[in-house]
Image (cartoon, rainbow, N blue to C red; front, top):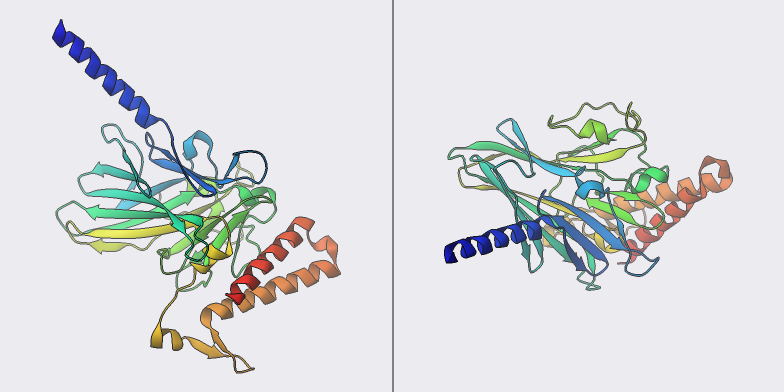
Length: 348
């Protein structure tokens, strides 16, 4: 009888633990809330709203535990989605700075994803989330590995401007940004109240080899790279005006028990996070990247990008003011906000 009683207690403990780890885990730092879904290996990100009490707004699609946003690994040509598989559970752990997932989908590799909050050194406020994906080659031989991520963004879909970057006012059709060709350092999805920004460059974020901006249906495939048609709309037969982002990071040859590290940074569109998209160098390396304007004032490459963006925004505002029918009040408001952010960066 005693043994049966002990067995019953053990079964109850196992059941309780399974329910415990299946429930979403909320981690709040500053105005951001990170929600982890240990049973699936996904996450959501929220920002505290200015409206209501303790009300948070999602920064990307959060229905069904954010299942429409996901990461995948390519291992020697085979693609593995980072999710729970039969007999391959996701291991979840809450850490002092955030949370961690461990995926072991095959004997060839293991992936550890560490989620942590980023704090501004100047304001000491939380400004974003850092995701470090560490792929370990456990195959016992050299292997080719790469990482990709799909984000089901939705903030810009109702605004007419699905995305914008530091160099492009509006992205409203199928677009791709390639490393070494394009110079965009971040991309933003934004509505009237909240925004979501992804760093493409900087000292922290690993620059993607290519970023695809397409309809979510076209990106929601394990085919490593989607079909791409420049300028095609964000509509499909079953999905209208549904844009999303696909980040594809460079492939690397990884030795046995060595690692491939990829870092992604995302958060609300703020001057503090924008500053992290710039590469900060020191000494001769920094000086070698300086140019001279006509006035003789030193101008860094980053400031050149900022100046080009400011001129672009001012030109667009002038067009709208001369002919208000060219754009909505919302676009004019966003352009003015973007200009404020860029000008505040120039003062730093």
